[in-house]
Length: 561
Image: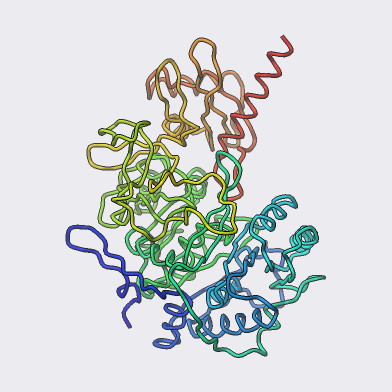
């Protein structure tokens, strides 16, 4: 059978995209069940559990493979079971399942029922959980059966009146019903009820790089927007095997671990771990014959900086990255070591892929890529005027250029959406970039991250990209700190590689290094060293936390003077 995406997606000769979204589209029925009917043995999921996992057992199988027939039947059993427990269309169910294989069929089951799925990270604390339960009126929680996680969830649920059912997977837990044991006495078919493309499908909370997490709601048409993600950026293969490094609690899992991949005919590889091991990751890539790979820049930096790429990508045909901007130095070194380009992609929890180095475009190391033909984003100044080449401004999607699929719902009844990215029909990303003469976007920073010093607008990422080239630097974050004469000066917070000393000589060396590679006004006037940079749950550096900490220190210093 031909990949299902061809029924919904067409690329025209002029490079534009046509996306057909049926009014009754539902991913579970129209993709999973349809493939199961037409080609039941087609591979859907390959799962390998690492021994670092809390639930790892020496007596159980640690590698499993699922066909689409398996996914169809398991999801129907789970749907019938959840309905028997009082879960209904329009309800909200939170999923805290890490990378356990049950996530895929339980998520599909929720889509069949018409439930709004709330994927969440296992790293949430008590207050985080209560906030999410209250804001969404979650009626049930499905979580991995780890004692520490179940304890947190159960305690939070006691303070959340809307929660009436607690389920777990992978292991038994006190106060939870083991859903992955209970479903097998239920029918393996589920009758399709009314489905609409506008049905609420997924509810995420943003990662909070510049403030508190905000609610993001996507409707049932959202999976179709990720055809572009998988086909034109990740370059997945029909009958290939794609691995995206992402926890299921984040939108990156929707980008790389289910929707676009299955629509385009690729199976999904899941590396289930608690403690990341680059050596084990490379072993999985080779042993399972992973054809396409996507990971955040953090992992590529780690692989390159620690010289861990010998033959690890021998079978991988294509590599991509997203989550934050990637430094040109890492892209170039990775290519030298593996022969593979790293294709950058950019989007948000609130969107699908907006900008990328697509399969038909040359890779430009350090760039974000070119605008998506699905959304055609542009760069505008503070007055809403489209910027000229090399002029920095905010990435936005004007009403006349945006597709109506894959962007978050502006308003939704019953939800406190927080600070919206919408201004009328204008979609604001809050990210600053510039466009070069070839049409490539280059990341400058978040609106709140850009440093204004002596009349100059300084991109933190540009300075970070210089610093990361120094062999002593493992990771860095550049921020601005207040200065009476300049307004702000550049500060670099640095994690050094093992074997390097954070002393005055190192500071002078790094300043000279930057000075020799860029303009004087971009050189960090202040450099501090830390063991670890503050990050979101999804691994993005929290510049806002560094800025707030510096502001507090400055205030305390001023008081003491």
